[in-house]
Image 1: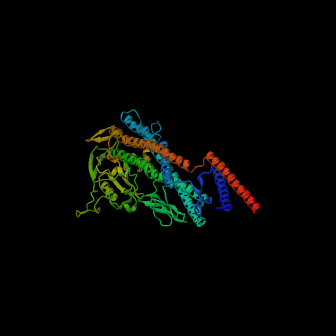
Image 2: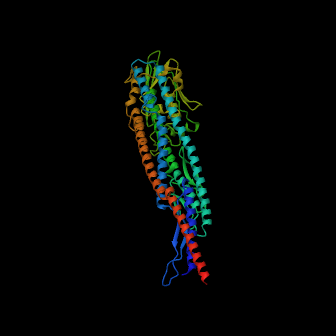
Image 3: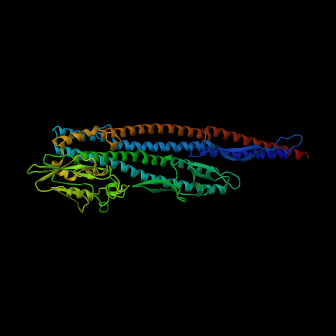
Length: 576
């Protein structure tokens, strides 16, 4: 080795020091930049040329690498998705809880209690018929408003879901563009750290929206997958879109790949949280409210339709409108679309019609059979000879003193001859309640429940009594309806109306409490992993300042090497 080698060593040290100062300066400049990963200068000694003495030939630059742990990043992305989903679910459940407003004086439980209490007080003679009807209107209005609030929340979630999917699609498009740029700029072998930092930050943003995983290719590009379905393949984004899929009478919203139409199984992130809570707790609460309202409509109408007053009825009409095409179909025929939407279906059975001649006091009782056994005349399965609304009208019209028909408005109407009155009784088929004949409520669920229109204008039509074994009990129907509050019924899965809603609220409260816990736990896990990432990839300004001083000293030493070697060379030349 000679003085030339010393110059080479000094020059490599100068170059390495300059690069070190640049890297440390860049780290300090980006100490507060979101997503920036600390860069580390790669240096290695240059081996000597061999011989008896091998000192080395200085230092070589091997690149500037990002200080990242891909496994840690993958765990962090997963934790970000879980925490975002949990937080979104908690937000939605809190909104439902606010709408329900339980454990206050302005909740459904209180309205139910007041409604049934009004019938109890009516039966005891301490409340008027008009007050009972008003209480029914208050309950029906409360149910409609509550359902409207819940549906509005669902509509808002649908809008939010659309915005989140658009955001996810834009991020996927940007990742694909970065993949193309990274592949192009890294073709020479050096990593493009700023672009990789930006891409990692975008993957974290996408993880906030949905659960994703990444696979890096040899070219430096990454594929982004949701489950096993790719949404980004190298420089091409497959596209992410929100699709509406018919599911019976409802519309399901699903996330799919634009290019292939494949439905993505998004379970985490804000999108996953919205989907799970919308299709789960929110739709479930609406369904339970509809079930409660539908049950109350049926059970109260079942009692009211067979109730009576001392004066009896001179006319009655159904609240359910049967379309012309369904009037010739059996009430239990699956093709009968009008009855298919009923909360409760009528069954095989029948009911009694009690007709009174007011002048003579003569009473005649006729049973109207309702054939809904699903067996045709040949004994096979079929609905050919089962009861239609037209058959029901004909059977009623055949009773002496009554006339019945299905009008042009699709309603069954029954009228008594002058000087005659009638009442219904012992309906084992439930057909009167389903059709809404002499009913208390109209509607089918919480969306349209209301007190029967003509009942609101004529409180005297309220059926407070009923015939029991041929004897008129003045407060019989009032007592029966009041008892429904705590009576288990099949239409509410064997629970009472009060118990059914209490179970609904309690179950929801447990889920809301669990969501709070999950949100807190997942946030702790996410923050812990983020702290690990920052400890590894974040910039410590004190550490970088020390590195800057170190490279400054190294630069000064390298300059001294060159200066000393130059002096030695001058002395050598002077001797020569």
